[in-house]
Amino acid sequence: MGALRKALSWEVKLWGRVLRPLLSCQGRTGGTRGRTCSSRQPHPALAGLLSATGQVSHWTEVFEKRGIPEARESSEYIVAHVLGAKTFQSLKPVLWTQPLTPWQLQRIQELCSHRLQRMPVQYILGEWDFQGLNLKMAPPVFIPRPETEELVEWVLEEVAQRPCAAGAQGGPLILEVGCGSGAIALSLLSQLLESRVIAVDREEAAICLTHENAQRLQLQDRIWIVPLDVTLEGSWTHLLPWGPVDLVVSNPPYVFHQDMEQLAPEILSYEDAAALDGGKEGMDLITHILSLAPRLLKDSGSIFLEVDPRHPELVSSWLQSRPGLSLSLVAVRRDFCGRPRFLHIRRSGP
Image (cartoon, rainbow, N blue to C red; front, side, top):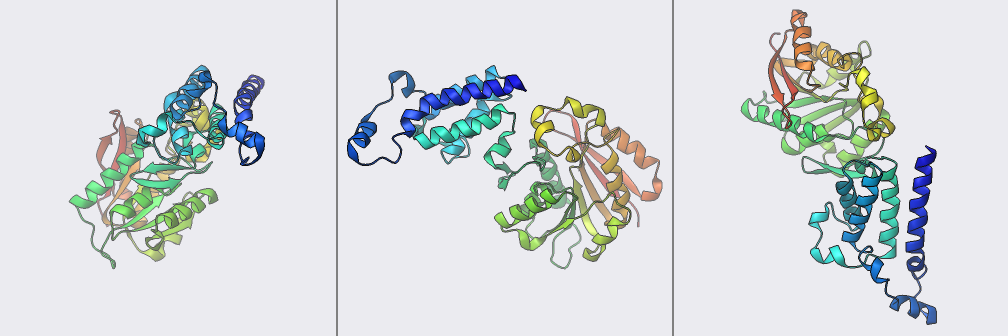
């Protein structure tokens, strides 16, 4: 920890020397000194460094030396964000090489100092795109992963192929367990225009962030966001007023407890451990969802889960040992890395 503080202090001092003469000119528009500052050109050795491209190269090198994962990607996202873009590649080419303002340079330095402390880029930027939606991100709420976009796509495919029985409003009623930032629920709402979602989470921070993102995307009229811990006895009764649901969708905590200590510092230091730790075999919340689902699902309703690659076999065995639930594992889908990651479980009886 002492070495980390020392390294961070060195970075701050370095940028203090670079920025001080520039910042001293900021806001000076009159007088002899103001004219001197406005006409001063940066030293040729600094000219390239003070551009967007130079900043990306500089911070990529710093991150690489410090062992920061995805060094270039982190640098590009931060520089683009400060310049008002989502990606570096989307910036106009003229902005790549023109000198940045003192404020921009200072802001880049501030955000990069957070990355040096292993804060995830999503939290640093305060937003992230998921399924084409721009969502607010804030620690410690779980950051949606690219794999989870595949879960959403699978649900959309299944709904399109086997339309749910139309409810009062003509679309499926979906329950999401563990809504986090609202990524899954809001993605489904945005693409299933007549659907409705009940989104539950036991963490207040997640409930608040889902509320904020629903408002941000103007989807608040078709989502009910409920603080609820489904592991508590009788919790399912709080969901009965909405009626039986067509689908249950969840990206539950599924990391095996023994694997938690192997997670990256970005995860361990900033994200809520309760959103990751699935217990001894990563099945704690999964089994609660499966036990709860028959009481809430319509006949032939479906459950879609994102799981650990070791879970398809474990879940299949667990379901076979509990025939009274009338649930069967009907499909397993692999993620883009070829790992068995998603489960489709269907209710097969009344």
